[in-house]
Length: 186
Image 1 (cartoon, rainbow, N blue to C red):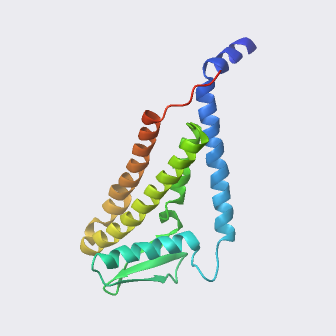
Image 2 (cartoon, rainbow, N blue to C red):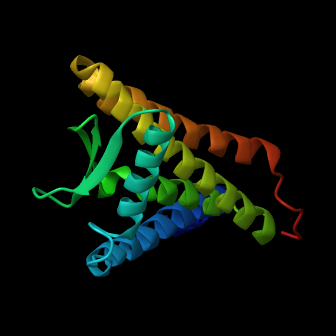
Image 3 (cartoon, rainbow, N blue to C red):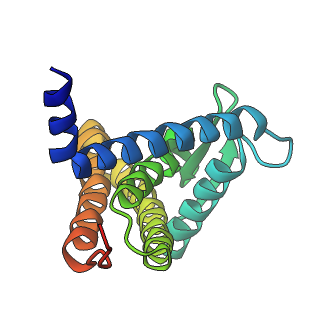
């Protein structure tokens, strides 16, 4: 029995390493993010720095697209509210800031680590892409809900999550297909 277990581990060494690295890095990063959320609340950036900046940048895109918009702190929960033409349209909560999506992306890339230089550059580039597209996503979602409030659930619950997770999946595919692991002596 013990010999069979060792044989299984030996045969599936790469898969086991991938799973341990993926879940290990995901758990560590998620715990660090939770710690940040507990310690990150300040009087300057409500509800915390990242969510505040995401709401601010989303508002700037909406204004750039020609809408009369502003953001304000929500009196009801830990969120920033975005208004168009004086009507509050959306709330940007912590779950909207893309950090959890970036942690998922990063964990996968670390599990498929190539050279450290390639890996870190791709993590940086991918995180910037995800963050930027998330801000655009929030701006377009806000505008979409403003014009088509009857489709709020579809846009918020299906269309835009599919878009952001689709981008993450595409980045994973590009990483796996285009970056070859350097030859080792194993």
